[in-house]
Length: 139
Image (cartoon, rainbow, N blue to C red; front, top):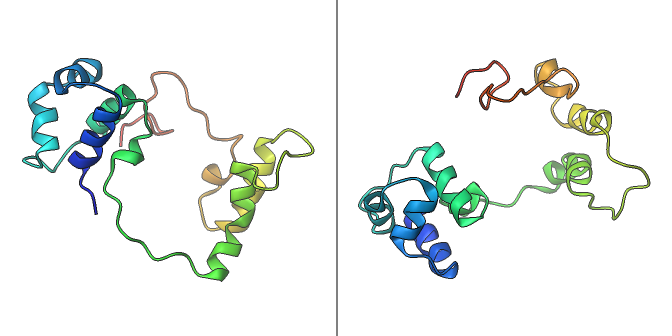
């Protein structure tokens, strides 16, 4: 299992960046990059990890520690099939453009216990400057 620092170092080197160059692009200190890569500092805020990921042009999750998770059982895998199809178009090109209602109905089948605003994409509104949570708070 690779650490956050090992993921950062690997991607940074593939991009041909120095630690200082990455720090400058991410708006963090070179000292932080160095400590993360040397595993001298294992705790990193998600916001900081996101800045580094944006600078490296990779998804934030690609820098996170990956645990060897067991694959989902067949029942769970089948239950999530409509969501995968809605999100990733696993059945090839859709006959029509994806809609918010289509995604909402796919989620209804998988997570009927979620509060309605989370299942109804038309009721969730994100506005610029609102933060990452619909209530406006940063979680």
